[in-house]
Image 1: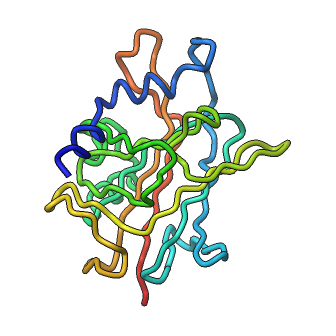
Image 2 (image 1 turned 120 degrees about the vertical axis):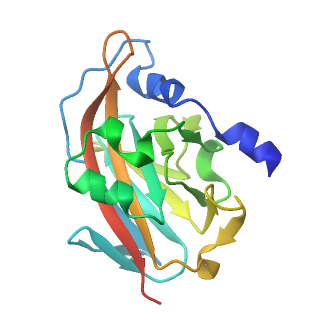
Length: 203
């Protein structure tokens, strides 16, 4: 686990620089857009109603639809503080789940886990087929469908042990997702969009 921890934690600035630059090295300039997200479980779409998705304690997937190669910062926590802050309109830099360093997973999500943290976001992106944090990406004329499968969690606020979904004691995971850009000198994050939801385990 120590070796994993050395590989997974990177500065949020580094992560955002990658997401802010295209393959040609030019800074992107995009307008605010809706974060097109749904969940899948056992081959079915999980409805998100009133910012809440109810699922079984089994493997599931986050599914993002991007119009172009893109990235998200996603905070997942057992604590509702970041969720409540995001929902109330708190500026991004003041939301607890985004005040610390970002977390970078291995390429292609080979082990199907997600990090839980009160103060650090996961960094998920698709750059091209050789550089992605998603385990499945399909492309068509409308863009990119990027799937990230979750079958276990690593709670960085606890013992940082890998724990299967079926074994976690908590009933709710609070999710806050943002898309960002940086200003011209990379000293300030500019929020493009945000979305928040609760994942409730019902079985």
